[in-house]
Length: 122
Image (cartoon, rainbow, N blue to C red):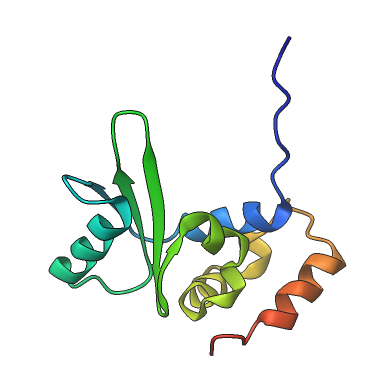
């Protein structure tokens, strides 16, 4: 019996497209927990936001983090709520909403929710 695939939300797909334009860094955890390794990498490297950090925990597991203006977030949270981050908004404006979200068919409800929170962190 085949496994049923989980449906991914249009909002998260839109966020994945936005995050595809962000610089990505890959690192190992070493002896630290993944979030600690990510924070140390940011501090030692002097990274500026936005950035994606792929932290390899072991040969099977990789944790993804988003380094934004307000701190370190899970990449999944950033994908689902990309409209809350001003630096990601700049990316969308630079590429153009029409080109960025082409073919996603975001509904009016999706846009209302995005517009409701658009200036939440500004």
